[in-house]
Length: 328
Image (cartoon, rainbow, N blue to C red; front, side, top):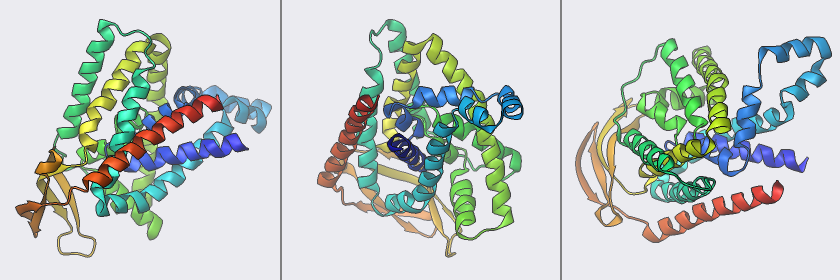
């Protein structure tokens, strides 16, 4: 029972991480020691398992699909997603520097954690590390698109987001942001469905979920194969993704362009289109009038608090790593 509770907590941490653009649930899975079991469990869900259900009953089917693992992990993820939508999103809006600092420390420790799994670095691993870091960094500075609210695009968004969830260092929610779908999926439909049930939001969330299902069943096989046959190069790529993603979670940003949704309405929200990382001494907050940035003023850097949160994030991962080793 204790093992199941901890598994659910790991799932909850994965779910909450996916709400934060720039943070990956795959990172949490990796550092808590369940990454490969997760891939193998998903990969193992094949049509012949349904035949087993018919021929030998539910108990044999449940054991064959690693049902207990699925139930507690994905149950925890679902709860974490709900909690994240209503808590972390608000914390990011109220205390962005402190929250980003925590995740920055967490990901710095993740780079160390994943990289140390490679026992011997070769030229190939170094090249893959640099290349994947460059790709990940470029993703963090790319400008979001407008996005489409067609069902086929909602399905595609789910497919891509869930694939990113399975890659440490690549954030599914941030890719949704780049596709112009984060606000539409998370706020306009998921949050709306949870707080005020309606069939329109239900259809959108259901199509998104189907895209996620298709993505996770296909991409898990690719990742499982690469881990089995090319473990060190795969780890180098994952380390690079984490390294490049640090730019996204750097706490101090200079916002250059914004887009205001539902201007003048009760549900008015601001989406950052482009921003760049700056040193704390150069940090400024923008002044907005309507939908436009009209100037900047010196902002509170929360430097001491930010450093403390970075240390907490770093220390938490080290503690999780140690706990996972003791558990295994």
